[in-house]
Length: 199
Image 1: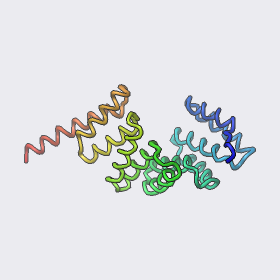
Image 2: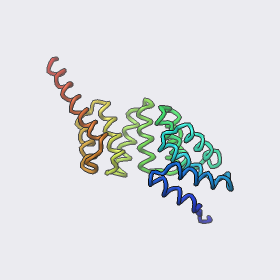
Image 3: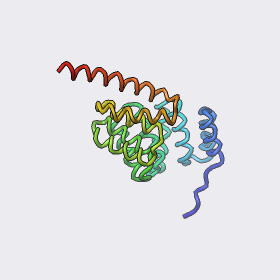
Image 4: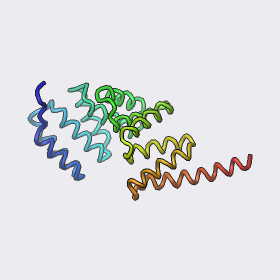
């Protein structure tokens, strides 16, 4: 198989994206599309940048185009699945993320998103199993730890949730989400203990 060469402008766009210069990254990718309307990576990058800007409609359009060109792009399926999870389209999100997982198995970030969407689509147990697997593959990823913690918090598994948020704070002491969630865990634990005593 021929070595897939990444377009030099894609590398530049990726750098801009990582610097938080999303609009500049999008412009670079649009330049690629003026010469090559079938450049899947350009659509993926555009989608990813619009996702960071929370412009979900534009992200959706770009990523749908990427999938139209290459149905088996793990990245495009993953990103569009992620967009749908941000907008609460849980079922569509699960389907796309399952495709991404089949094209690129055991990728912790894909599994994290799939677990999260599955949990919210009503398949709570399966969602947690996938998040646990994701954590096994990337044990120090704060995003995974927080998502799994939130699911355990929702399921009133307070001790497990607390452990996960504490671990996040060991890795990232300033992680606001983990701090807020840990406070929530402590609050609910106290309320729950009061209820138990009343019974």
